[in-house]
Image (cartoon, rainbow, N blue to C red; front, side, top):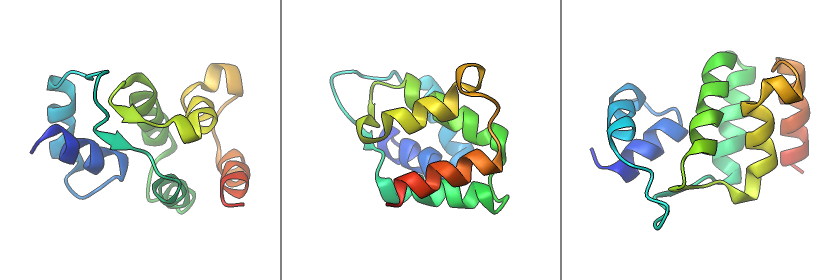
Length: 108
């Protein structure tokens, strides 16, 4: 699995997510090249899946931390959302009510 496929699997919570994690960890976040762009559709899907308890809140926070820390993932369109999801110390504890509010704002 290459880094692009691994990032796509991880970010979309795909079926091969567990296999993708070692590829992501062993690969460097090349700041000169974007390997994945976080789309609104993917972000909405992940948040909806979390609201349906398919994705755990702790996994969502880890997911956002990884996205925020990688230079090879373009999340510029959703920087504020990723920041809010990954920084519970500043933004308050993540819960389903907050996710629903975020989802409402994004889906407009």
